[in-house]
Length: 427
Image 1 (cartoon, rainbow, N blue to C red):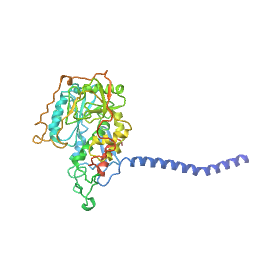
Image 2: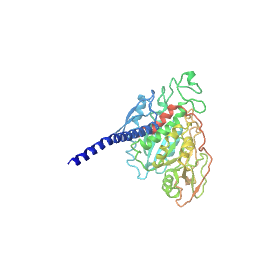
Image 3: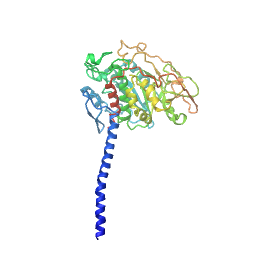
Image 4: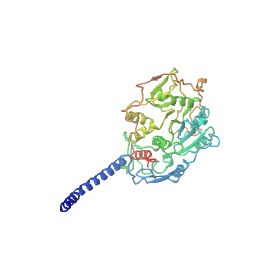
């Protein structure tokens, strides 16, 4: 009995000596987990400054609390636009359902109503347009642009309005703040706010809105909208100065179906050549080339790869979204980013005005408001043959890794807002 008691006392003493070691080890593990989690968050988004506040909004039936996200404090008008974004598509009475294999179309627009009228008219002639959903993403709110879209009757249509567009904030960031530095001001001398770009120039809200809108739209369409956040098919993106041929939708359906077999290394499918002035080769073959910015379509897998490159996108000093993609995002994938297209174009870029010009009858610059494209019969029906082989174009000219950017995107506030757009649906 004494021997058993002695062993028990020895065991208890050993346990008491071991207990502090176990406690310290567990505390260390918990502390490491906390630091890793904090480090990952703090390296992705910037904590709010005095100019920003936390925001909670409702998306459908779920509440998204936006924490540690540098979103500007919203104006009443901004909140109204955000609420409007949650309205269901129109024309459900005319088109109550979508085709099972439909390709959603996103038309992103700025303030060029003359252009938009032409683009919408071309879409109305597209074969199969009534089978899909058209989402029109506005860079802010302009009544004449809104009226053009409200007249659409040829398919389901949903409008979304960028609630953080500089055009919605006339007296504060991301619009123009009274204390903002202008042009090449020295912040210390002028006692103004702003970080200049690599060329010494301060931000221009009308210019940076181009990149902000595209990034907000991408995050919203893929991850924020009830209509598309669970969509696993392809989504087509076009702009207000793109004329879409009648065969575009049917051709795109064929291309996206052929892509896995014919070009498994292709990330996307395009309606037009990457050279906006080209109309295609007219060959009896498919073309794989660098991804263009006219009528491009990709799926959620590709979007996830793009979203993982948020830092590359948000910190590259160029106000153009497409040049940013070509010069830093795509090269970071590690292999060439090819897109698949047909040998004849199914979309044309017709814009001759700047992005924020062309509004109003007096300022319109598309041949007095008329666009005349010669459409041959072959452009009105699907003209892609599934038996064609693929011709690969390598080493094409254009923006590549190493290009340092045109600037216009040096302000740290724009960087924070860009990072926040990437996180706003991932609470």
